Image 1 (cartoon, rainbow, N blue to C red):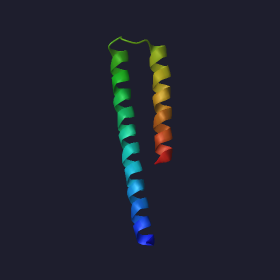
Image 2: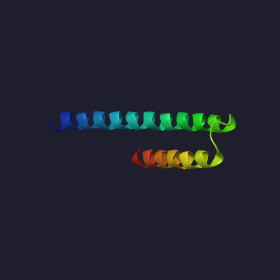
Image 3: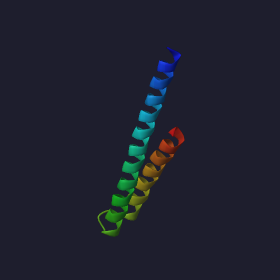
Image 4: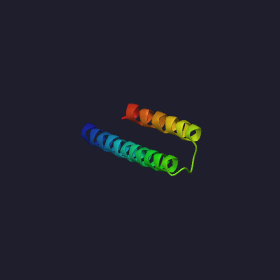
Length: 66
């Protein structure tokens, strides 16, 4: 019984790690698109910096959870 519980817990941990890795990957993609928007002149520097700071905080939060 303890073995089954341990296996279930390990599966849940792996699932959570995968979800967090996907969230981190999406943050990377958003940061790339944000940088492209700045370079293309679609957003100003102030907007870029605010959004970048929020994305970096999100990534830090994800890294801490991992």
